[in-house]
Image (cartoon, rainbow, N blue to C red; front, side):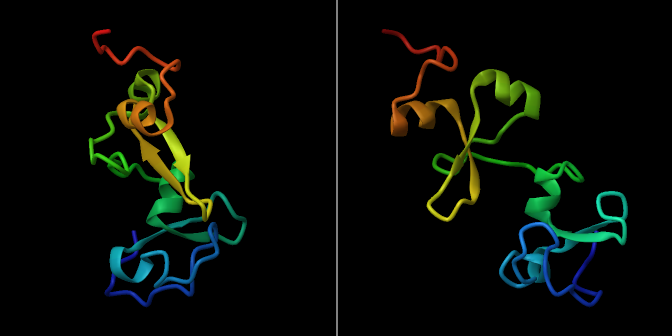
Length: 111
């Protein structure tokens, strides 16, 4: 993973944001030569979505830590797209509370 000691790239080859806007200058980046023929440089968020690295994720509203991806999906975690199209993890409890969506899984609530 790239670090601050190295010269930051111009931006992410996935989301297209410049390095400062997508956190590459502050948080680092991932280089990969397999996705693009000439190699690619990705912010940490895009590298996670492209499954190049695994980052800890937490619910955008309640900060509950997401467990391993397959187990989280089985429990009803989803990604919520905000008005800018950015994806944010959402736990099943917040999904039910904010959007009224409970049919995906049993929340284990009484009633």
